[in-house]
Length: 626
Image (cartoon, rainbow, N blue to C red):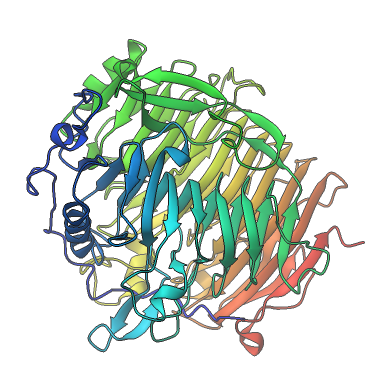
């Protein structure tokens, strides 16, 4: 089914719930006491007040109550500062008579602490529903703003006991960008990526699944989705752009664009996200998966995911109260970094300079730039992994929010051990005005970007626009020129979501680059065509490959337009790339969301995505066109 994307809501009824906090201490549960349970003595590592660790000996109703309380506080807390992680020690949770029904709100991570996903079993459901934003919570029900959630490293045995007739039909995971499902084993029922149990319009704009074993999947109204290195029973449909890489059971894509599937037999480059687990003695460890090329299927089917294990004592476990100079001192000493949930105000760069350093955030740990700082700088050295971190722009413009490798000079990364960014998200504006020139800059060769959402916010809390003219003011106050700039060679992106930047959303200057799924919305808010000009050219392409690049591949890409301030605004091309045999785009599209126009899909080729075909994509099977 084709669903029109009406543009995300500018302000939501519940987005101002900034002061609601739930902590394990407030609930009468600390990390240490929650983890306590036979047969092993618990690890006493302090993961902070916003981490709750459950053990299978706890009463189901107690676990349910604490999860419900957190959901009530987070379900509408889109722009809040609260961050939470709920972790389950190995064992089984919920019963046939009393299943767990877990709902995930904003900035919430739900993860198992087993070495394998099968070590933690949830009997029940883990769900995300539409938010109903009008008519007292009964109308305009959508998942378009269901951001910032994490589900990982557990087995879900679907049990709908106690739910109404519609809710009993599937496990609902109605989400959009900045949501990942990794290392999840689902059985006992179907998985729906759309919440069809609420009133319409039921739009959704996700999303990402990796390293998971899934039953029959209903895509429903999801506009785009990447499923990578997984096993699926079946896939129901596609809306605009559905991509599968290294997926056992993936649908064939020979009939593209009807349905709009893009299927790669293997994933060209893969390193799964690091994960926290407890060993047989009850001690925390971090598993860092190994690099694989041309891979298929899950990493844990034959046992422990290949890779290396790091003891928690090798990590500096940070909280938002720790000064940056202390964090940098620990990194310089050779320790890894674990960021516990919270918002870290960063007025000088956190610097990762040593090879093979792991920076792991849990519970959507967020680095917010202060005084124009670059919050995170990663040297161009082999093997650095940054995962589970969100980076926010501050009110003073930063030159960049995350820089990988030197802009000038030698970088020492290697093809065998690439720098890896997993579930690293960027936000420019939303809870406050944000300003940056570039969000993500990759200067090093041999980098893997495995799922990112790079977002210049199109809506936010009251006062977000700092003026009386709404979105027109936002254009001049909430500024971000470029979303992603790739200068390094041999950079691979699996799941690249970039939205609303004021010039090129993505600029790819490095050679031998590969992108597997690209999703982009052009900015909603240029005040006029004069504000949206690239020299003499109307507008800036959503995806630009540098003119000197000789080799580049893109599989499954979409650029969307919704120029709400001035519907007469035009953009010449959705994609701009050099016309060379080594530069190839497969399965790309543009679409109009009800205002403005994109004249061509790529390089003057393809019909216009204008208001004569709202919601109906313009597809190209390949470029260059044969």
